[in-house]
Image 1: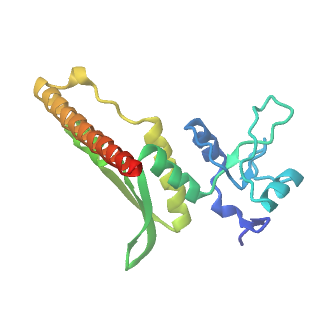
Image 2: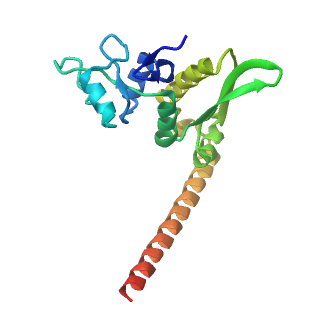
Image 3: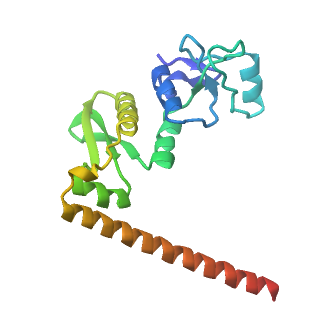
Length: 200
């Protein structure tokens, strides 16, 4: 049976330990509720007042402070959007197939530019894991994996790369820089044209 707090389903919010991990990864977006020191989603008159006035950016204090009310309690939707926007990690929940009543998740590890660079040293492009009994179980597992990926994101060890790989890497970087310079040049030219048009 679902549990609710002020009309919100508790299962829509991430677990406390995952909220702590998200805070360590610089999650600081407005949320409906905070967690208290006991790791429970809480509300008081201040929280209720903020929700009534559509204010969700609860003040976050250090645990030592007498004003401590906990850390933000994001929903799974907020957490997944956070990884998409900040770390370019795209993920979604999948149904295994039509014959199985099980679920999984799919995570794209890297942006297109990063794929070109990291594939040279054998970093996987994505991860697909299945076999979960419910979509909610798959969501939890997916979030845990996203946190793990960011915390342990591999770095390229140039000293271990052969010279030809380093040259290839540099060529890709140079092409990327040239593409960026071209984009900037086009933007500057567009801004100049717009300014001249406005003067007229």
